[in-house]
Image (cartoon, rainbow, N blue to C red; front, side, top):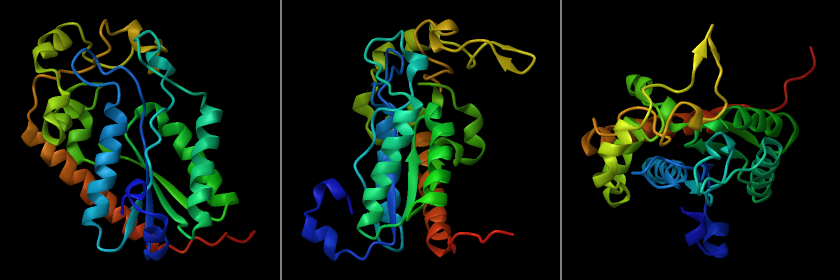
Length: 245
């Protein structure tokens, strides 16, 4: 059930097992992919998994602005502070829990959100009337994960499958020529660069021209299956507070 499309009476009548909260960003994705890529991919995975899930899953409206200051030099990028982001996600989960939807998966599409989502989920589970875990779709696609860059092969292939009109194919050649092969500037296992503009002229990391819609379909299928498996585990898990030892 997509919550934004339901009436309150529809939502009230639903026997919900798990809630999915898509979380993404509004940030540059090179000259060929939209600013909303991370929000779109997270929402797509959440909605596909809700359709495939054997129980009933509610998909909350997407949190579309995340922790993205590392892309601030590229026009259109929006961001919030980590404290603001964690508090907002926690409040949204609290409102879901108020309706009895206490098992929540935070379905994420942006790498910059990962640390804060882990912290938010732990705080929610320890201190609130809900149990939450983070899920980042591109970390749950098997060996494909090693190709994850930024507006590179995985995200572009995903878009080519899910909504090909979003990819400006006439700009892909420029995206690959002015991009970077890897994320960051590394010395002694330390990334010296805080912002993507320090190592990528146009914000792209990885080759967006090398992969097809067929790979995108496989990515979406793998992420959907992984999210459904996680939802089963979340619903089945006993998550009462552990007593003091």
